[in-house]
View 1 (cartoon, rainbow, N blue to C red):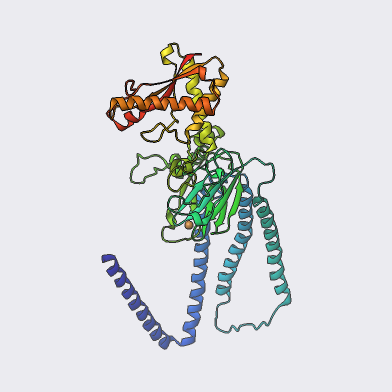
View 2: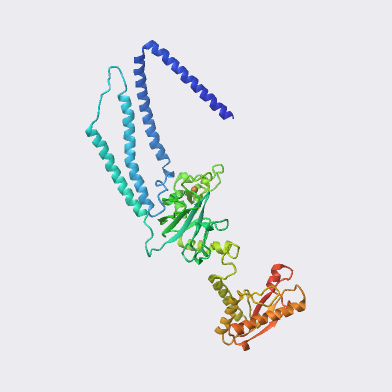
Length: 500
Ligand SMILES: [Cu+2]
């Protein structure tokens, strides 16, 4: 409020001053003669213009020098990507020519208005046109522009070249929406799965088509991590309005257009750590990150590359920042291994999952591996009593001895192991938790073990003389029967290896 009142008072005072000066000039004009007064004013204006011109040019040059270590392309901010240098060079060449024009035209502008100001006895020269002059000021800019445009086109074609057949690269996808970037990595298969905008909803932010297995391993990380020296192709899309994928330190900038995927290929060549070391050399980046806390880490240490949106896309535009890390190949592989598939983590077996209730090839593979690991461990056990393999994926319908459909995969693993070890004999055992009647539990465990026995012998052709079945009711718990989790563990089917 005080600031507003002060501002208002300033404006009122300014108006009063201008009106008073006007009155004084009027009076002086009356005293000294109008024309003479005008000539003096012309001369003064010309001189003030000259002073302004000198101050302005000094200010322009000095501020450019003062801030050069903050500007892209200068000081520590030379490009961190392979192609970036050519763009920086282009900017410098353009700046060189436009800089010359900028300085010369300003000097000419103010010098002329001073030198040729209206004065006693001077008359303006009438000049309809001058061919020579017009040819000069058309040809020189045309030649310079042609040179700039051609070298610009050349750099553009170079920078915008897409991946060629057989080249090694990683593809990353960035989808802009109000107001963030949704990032997607292809996962181990190296393929970004297909999308369909009609499928976009709260849990499927990109509209991925879950029936397609190439979507199953796709990752949705929170930051962009890239290995140094490797080609990256960024597929850029938008979900609502225009956004712009901008990685200033890598000189990457491309519109994100709804319905029209764009791309950019670049190769980062400076890791985040190397860039920080570069910044460390400059006093500007030795200042504390938090200006109010001199003890806070210096700016160079907290520096991170960033992804920004360079299209004014709405009120939350500023919040579209994402951190970008460039690391060594090993660190990248490590990071990649830590990421988990979005489908497996957030979609699998939820209502959103069209494959709910089916087993995926990768899951079958994972379960087979788990089974083989457990079998190897059991066969290596010293004590015969420890040679037990729990069949974690054999399930029955509640309260009955009917095997669920998906149990067949685990039983196929058992059959395969019997074939692999022709001398192996086993006892299939059923166990329950302690809820309900003990006699009923006993009989349920026996019939469940028998169901497994029958399936192995009748459906999977395992020789019946090599296995037996037994039920133990709730007599052999492996966990507490006081918790849900414990009881779930106790309800189990397993087999014990009798002979190796
Ligand atoms: Cu945006």
